[in-house]
Image (cartoon, rainbow, N blue to C red; front, side):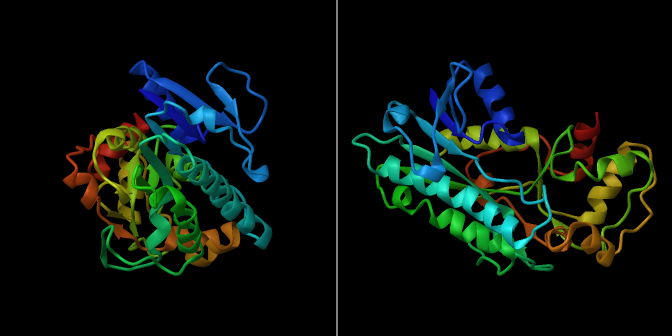
Length: 295
């Protein structure tokens, strides 16, 4: 199997590369700098440069490229970086794929569970309408940028609507884990909001599964939803620490700015299409996942 990956240096991309190497797959990594490894090929999304021959013979293209949403404060300039880092590269890949005489048959396109916005207790599937938050708008534009490939009947396109990724290195909750280990973790806001989450191990296993499973359109890459306080308590329990000190919503907003609204949002998302495709999570509920993350 030949797999071309954009965004291979991030948390998910690095783990996916390791999994594929373990299967002796041929991995090609798209990078924006001068290549320094035999697997690497250069592309330049900002200039619209991607040599189509790089994609020749690829069985799957995986696009995970994009600036971190929570890495920096969401100023107007940072919002533009978050948006353009996703849409520019996605549009270039989609145009290039659709313009090939023999395109790669599968495009697994990065996306996010933030597509649904803040929805309270509502149970959300891939058929649920998208929300109206900043991140929901980003996801809309991100997925729309893949339209040339979606419209090509020769290409199966699946959108990886990924939840909060839990990993031994922290993932999206990296800033929270040191507090939990110090016994300073607790409810974020009310703690009643639902978080859509998945372990890094299941995330990359799901992506590998979707390379073969005949699934297209949005796919929720999540496990069973849990309230944010349940996630914090599960991690604290495994770390043998209390989880009683609350962090009020206003304090989160002072620390994180507008990104706090994404953390406090409630997204009760279920992996309906992933389940129907036959995928089996290794960490379906948060208690077992917490043990895996903090082991």
